Image 1 (cartoon, rainbow, N blue to C red):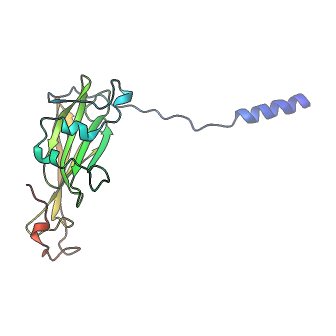
Image 2 (tube, rainbow, N blue to C red):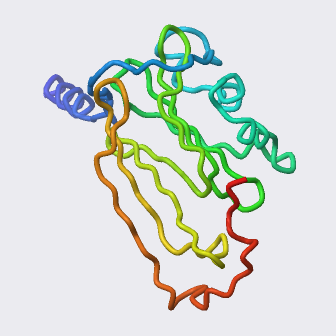
Image 3 (spheres, rainbow, N blue to C red):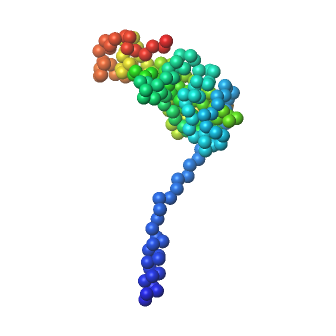
Length: 203
């Protein structure tokens, strides 16, 4: 009987499960397009390339405008106005990097850039230097949203937005879908009498 009791305790202990592991991977598509490589901020290898210094990548990219580079400074000592996302967009073995540059004052996007690893460096494969633009990664596709401002719109109340989805094919991003959303003028700042100077400037 003692032996049976011990066997029962051993079986009960073995039945306790753990949390398990998650399988992660990415789908392969096509090679990268040509572009201007920029040095990686981390060492070689897939593991060390999961994060980059986005400010360093942008500063060393000769294709980025002086206007964007001028915005790459800390906001009142609280960090740089840069958002960074990682995900598989181009089918590489290392996550691609999406970098959005914002204004310090009102957090309006002024530029979005996509980088792909190639030969131990990151090359720019997508650039949109426009006012009120912001990009995200959605299920392996690049989604770029740009606010639309009519005359008299304030920063917080644009007239609408364009949402464009890009897919990677033939070594470059190609537009797949475009959605235009017009916002109601009857809510929020519906009178349309906001100070015209408040709208984002392209300069």
